[in-house]
Image (cartoon, rainbow, N blue to C red):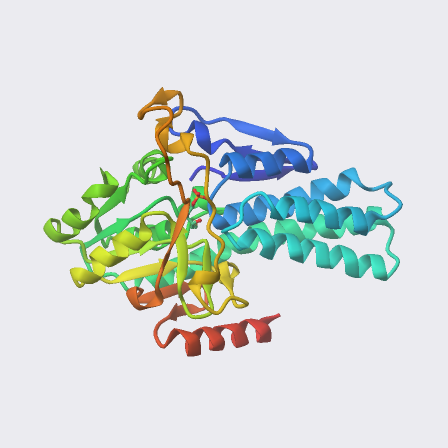
Length: 350
Ligand code: MRU
């Protein structure tokens, strides 16, 4: 399985996902601004991968600030700058706040910045490793929901490339495939940036998991005519009532799945929950540049001045979701009550 990122001798190597599938190239980040740029440009993307990359960016920021007279104050500005990179995936805030909180705590205990840096690096590596372990766990819980000879539809890329490894939605599919239970995966191409075609299809072909690529407009018809038993998608932010933000198009897929009685599962680690938001309406939705819709890479596909609406995410209401697959097990309705229980279980585990 291809590596999304690697922390190596105080530098962050990021797989440039904008170049896939044509070429496999790594970017060497030696300063935090380069990581922020990579997050904005989607060179690294997918909620958990953004979170881990941002954690390493905080370490790079701390490295740059070692001699600063107000080490923690300056690190707070790095944190704020990183938080502005992409607004929807909550994993970014989840990761940078943890690194910042540790820096602040150790600074209050009068640790010198050099020693603090070592601890921040260890925490970033832990965030990275934990993500892979969580995906393995949730993958096993999710696989148990799928029937024999499963025909699954997925949207966007919630695979190894969107995480530190193994994937969430694709983690479920990988686990079920290892048990010999995947007949076919239908991958939506995912306009406008084609994460499904470029990344999901690439990962599944590499792993020899049966995959058929469809355009987004084909999803409802594919469900109706190809015996799809389940839809499994990832998430960028899950509100306390289960409403889930994910790649634009997920909401439409969920409506089609509901109409045809196909269960839709969201696979996400607990780092993707935002317990502070009561409803999905409160989730900030990123809007990206119009040219992403008017063209693909350098190919112009629409009149250059046509008006464009380009939200990067939508929110699927909890009532369209059959279950949220986490590393703690599968959360089902009533979501408000059961997400509260999940939050309690998390507090006990700290
Ligand atoms: O814009 P992207 O490519 O970062 O969007 C990614 C998604 O929407 C994924 O489905 C989500 O982050 C889950 S990744 C495990």
